Every structure is written in C-alpha cells, then in structure tokens.
Length: 75
Image 1 (tube, helix red, strand yellow):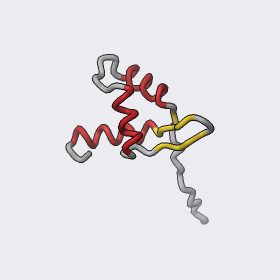
Image 2 (cartoon, helix red, strand yellow):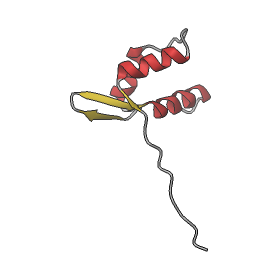
Image 3 (cartoon, helix red, strand yellow):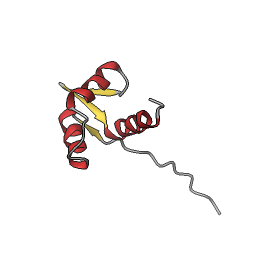
Image 4 (cartoon, helix red, strand yellow):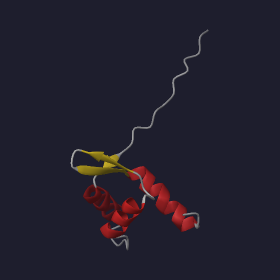
C-alpha cells in the first residue's frame, strides 16, 4: 500500500494596510492598535511585506503571530 505524502501548504492571507486595519477593527472594535502602529511595524521590518504593483501586502497571520508574541513578552 502506497502512502500519499502530500505536504499541506498554507496560503498566506495577504492584505493591504487598510484591509489589515479593517480586519483588526472588526475583530476588536475597541482596539488601541492604530493603522500607524501597523505601518511602523512594516517599515521597521518586524512584519514582512511583499510589493504587488504599487501596493505592499502583509500576511495577516504573521501580524497576528507578532502581536501575540509581543503580549507574551517575546516580541
């Protein structure tokens, strides 16, 4: 019997800065996180970005991971 060895690939959930901020606000309408804070994380290189045409895209899951690490004191 042959075992199928497929590797699951996580497709990044890439969003623009405004889409990322809208996602954060939807998840927590009273958040203290600002769009400018997210922009600073991107500019500083703490959150990777990908240029797509004239826009930069951010993986929303990587941003969430970063924020969780910051809350745990590891960021």
